[in-house]
Length: 112
Image (cartoon, rainbow, N blue to C red; front, side):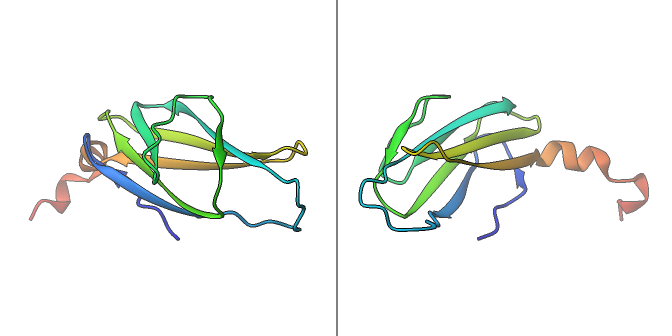
């Protein structure tokens, strides 16, 4: 599912995720973690777990939702990593632009 691109401080964006497995290995276990290189915010899982940057959390379902709440008026980026116990890692990056920043970019001719 697409994820919104614009966010304001205090707003929460929903990120719907599906784990796409390339095989069904009985012993496969998955973890999720995140890092935020730009901006400030909080990432929470649909089960209520509030993530701390770079801490690993077990993924127990193949479909889950993440909720990112902005705590910044700047551009924000979060990198989400899903890893399995066989050493494979998938990275997803999400960028959010502040509504305030977008308004600054509009040319003066757009004010009608």
